[in-house]
Length: 312
Image 1: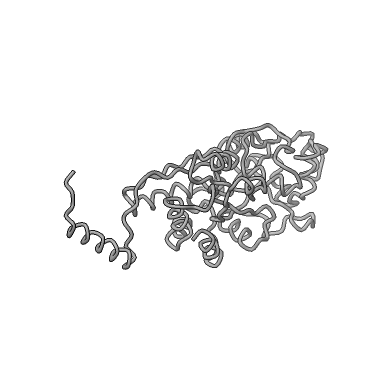
Image 2 (image 1 turned 120 degrees about the vertical axis):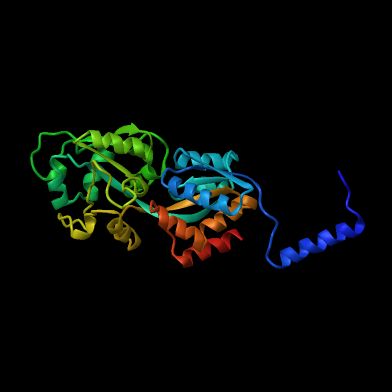
């Protein structure tokens, strides 16, 4: 290797100092790894694509597998960032996890659009207590309690088999934990949606990210179960969502009761590529990526600025 002369070395140092003084840091390179929540996955992939275009020397690998996997991988150091679509557990904080709020969304009850009691549910909605009777106590086993009339049809209940934020958030709304949920366990959002579409008397739950198509319509074959949030016995117009725009408005206004936060987990305060990626995700450019993808909701600017202060 050719050695630099003293003058050349001094010139290089002066150039580097000047570059930093002008805000031009050396180009980043290396590999960044993320794993975890299905809910965050589509947005994280889009963030990764945009980040790599701005930094050609960086490779960002993103994989789904559930919030539980994201948290475990971050704790064990298998990935740089864990994607977690639920609130951090105190035990995770004690093990050195630093959670950074990056998005928010919600979990929706879903059923087949061929469900014979769809009109009843769109008229009545479903009360939280009825969902508790279904998913927690098991005291509601037929569609009678949902439709408000004799149906002679049993409810086929679906839950998640993987440790995930959707199930944790759904269970928290019902006052319990994921392991308390009844139903046939299905892996991942795509799996549970397919199971519900194929079963006219089935009911499940899914992330906001997965129930709408790119145009914001509810996916073919599916219907959202209106939650009677005020307990009036009637599904009010703002509780029946025809598409993503109405659902997003209810989440943003906090009218929808199963809203939740999405986090990036890092082991210790984020450094290097992880820090740069998080800063990008929370930037105005990163927010435009979120809005373009449309599978999650960006944080308000003030909230993003607060999170950025925490990681810098």
